[in-house]
Image (cartoon, rainbow, N blue to C red; front, side, top):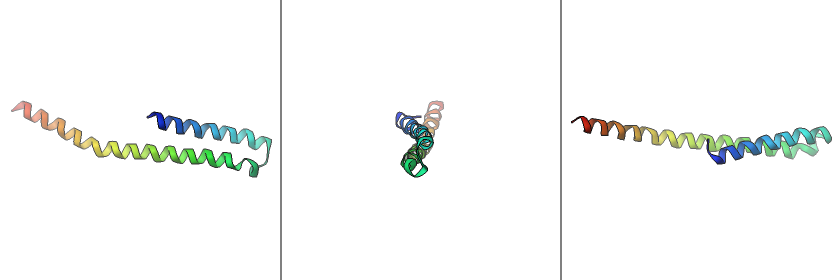
Length: 76
């Protein structure tokens, strides 16, 4: 997990914890913005994570192919 993913996930958890505390103190309408920030950071975390996994998946077969080609060339 990259630092940006950890920060997004931590921010989401922090805002959700703040939302619970604020919801107990006030009404749902007054604390709704904290809930939306928490959910927004969760969505941002998921988006960044999926984007990174897609990039790794796209690069991975190429690297595997290069390693296989090198092994074949060494055997000759």
